Amino acid sequence: MSASAAETVAGTAAETAHYAPDALGSNIGGRMESVGAPAPAIRLEGVTAGYGERIALECVDLEIPVGALVAVVGPNGGGKSTLLKLIAGVLKPWTGSVEVLGAAAGREAHRVAYVPQAELVDWSFPVNVWNVAMMGRYPRLGPLRQPGHADHEAVEAALDRVGMLDRARTPIGALSGGQRRRAFLARAMAAEVDLYLLDEPVTGVDVPTQEAIMALLAAEAEKGKAVVATTHDLGAAVRHFESIVAVNRRIIASGPAALLTNPEILSQTYGGHLLVLGDNLGILDDSHHHDDPAGAERHFHEDHPEGRP
Image (cartoon, rainbow, N blue to C red; front, side, top):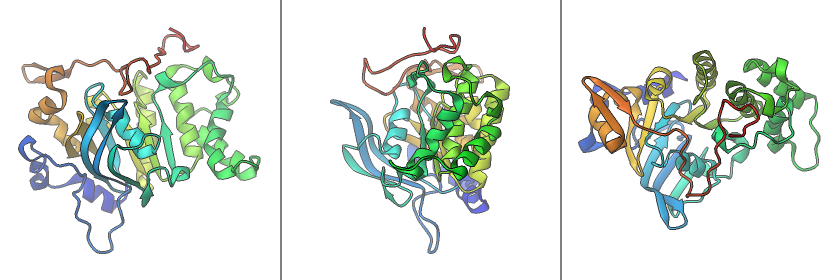
């Protein structure tokens, strides 16, 4: 993350107080932009969205700066995945506006990498790791061009960075859970984008894989890329991310990751899902539930390499 972005996100103790439940913030770093300051990577204003007649998010105002490393947390069905879809431009808001990289959401799609939850991927699709990573280059190729030398170099470099170059010809259905996430992260990195949107990128993987993935994402933020990832693991959010957005149908709070140590914010975010045991906090949550309407979910579990329950 750049020094300016880090300063914007980190905040001071006085700024952190702004995010107390009785005066919750909804912008990482606030909404005021100084003269000459870069435009935010993401800006949502007055956004309400949902599926059918069901509201998933309402009255959302949010700004995320360039170079931010942000965890989106909240209960299952609280709107985390919906928020990513709105930013990616795959879901249109009912009201309000979504601006991404200086344009309406979806207009700069070639600069955005959106990686959905692993459970929503058809792992039986006959494609290998190399092909998955090469998919990240397609927005640059256009409908008539074939991948060239630069594209192959970008894919090779991305697979090498995520430690999957030696599995380049392996079918995705034969991969473990951690390897699948690495392959799709390679696809995102091969695209050479300015914004990463990742839905549960470290869910269900072992600790070394989690650490490796987060190190790669932090390195991208250091380069000035914005990284926004959902997670149900509050410990991982505090350890690995510099800032958070707490969501439960609306934005409960946003700002430094230390906000997740505030029991009042957690209570407002998780409600009855919050379990208090002495000084310890736990979340009663099902990580395989999504924001999509009933009947739209598909579940695949890590203990079956072929992706079938």
